[in-house]
Amino acid sequence: MESLLYLVLAGLMTGAIYALVAIGFTLLWQTSQTINFAQGEFAMLPAFFMLVALNLKLPLWLAILLGVGVSILLLGLAFKRLLVDPMLRHGVLPLAIATMALAIFLKESVKEFYSAEAQRFPSLFPEQKVDVGGAMISIQSIGVFLVAIAAVVALQLFLSRTRTGRSMQAVAQNPTVARILGVPVERMILLTFAINAALVALASALVTPIYLAKFSNGEVLGMAAFVAAIVGGFNQIRGAIAGGFLLGIVDNIAAAYVSTQYRAAIPLLILIVVIMVRPQGLLGRAEERTV
Amino acid sequence: MATDAPSAPAPPPQATPPLVPAKAILELDGVVAGYGRTTILHGVSFTVKQGAITTVIGPNGAGKSTVFKVVFGLLRAREGKVRFDGRDITNVEPRRLLSLGLCYVPQGRNVFPELSVRHNLDLAGVAAGSGIDFPARIAAAMERFPMLRSKADRQASTLSGGEQKILEIARGLLLDPKLVLIDEPSIGLSPLMVQEVFAVLAELRAKGVTVLMIEQNAKSALGLSDQAIVLELGRTRHQDSAAAILADPRIGQLFLGGAMGQTAPHVVDAPPLA
Image (cartoon, rainbow over all chains, first blue to last red; front, side, top):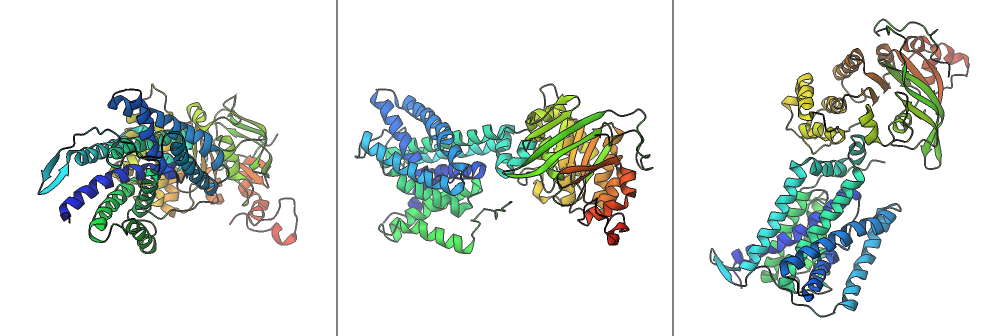
């Protein structure tokens, strides 16, 4: 049995990854009512883009950079233009269903055209472990945590300190008024899709060295991000962050103290309790429906 | 349309009479528009005189707000023309209209609730030209409305309804518009706040800014206005000086839901306005 401290620290690492994926999920919902059920697959696929680059004997840093770039093009811009725009005209639900189909398509494509076997993926960080207050934590975990946190902080600073970031917030809070003030609403929405793609690609590069690259990775990540976003409040980025960390920690503790078999049920249990007790989420606000 | 002929009766004493015959800054000519298959505007035509306050009145469903949305490029005109300052602006994007000198303050709450008051103001800068010292303009707006300065770092959602309206108006004025479209500015505000908002509109007129407003509080709005336009069922029913409209007994009837042409005896001598 691992120490509680170790489990919390490991939970923070997992939680930081969940938060990255959940933030993007929340961003897409806020700016364009897109519930992306392929979000997990979006975090699975970039690792394969990077593997293709690695197979061409490119260095890891360049492979990651290329993977992020290709993700922004395909999972950001092409996703928005080719799937979201045409489907959203028919409503939020048809789009949500289309993203489920996309999830299956991406998963099966990787299985068919790359491999059904888990692939090793090199890490940016060394293998050694360090002593953190008695718990032996790998430098890998600490590195993953710090990079994820840096990305979250950078995103928050961008959203709150720059006029472009605040324009994105304005589009999320009231698109009509944003348009009346001359905010280029369409461009801001496209930017959210690009940011989401960059976040999931980063999550992919961080998590795959630990879990290996496999077509089914998105199932766990997607569910975790979905639950984290809803538990946190769905319409709040800070809610997605809190939800991500909560889930990461509970996930690790449950695996150790409850049972590994019931591990996957714990997030869903949290989800049910939150929806019953506090339907707007931990940090969310009740959404108003206008028209 | 000959409704803005110079033979119109003198404006009410509250209104500043124009020294020279004012030119039209905004002209609508046969505007047809609607949502989906529903047509709301069946050919709206009117002119708005430069430097005056003009109020659009009419019963619910007359298409008052729809006219504003068409003028500001938020809803396509299927037919007809909109001209602003001699230029055709039919179906032009809001972003471009802002740079031409139009500004639109819609009905209801239009602040970004989770941004601070300062950042709400700052967002108007996205449409500002490069030569504009925007921080200086925000400072000047805070000078004019000290509430905006004392609450600059508060979330806009914490402001009262009246304060939010002041914020919206101040934000709209940051780009120095020539024409302000304002839809139901008094709705949901305390009488004191309504007075303040109307005072701001009068101040704008004194500076030569044209104001076109929709107001359910028609009596006080007409009292402040120089001109009035009566819309009914998506058509211009009447355009005249505000005083003449205010004195017209049929107006009260219009607000009770009847048609202007009807002459049912029990509504002929209804009070002019609610």
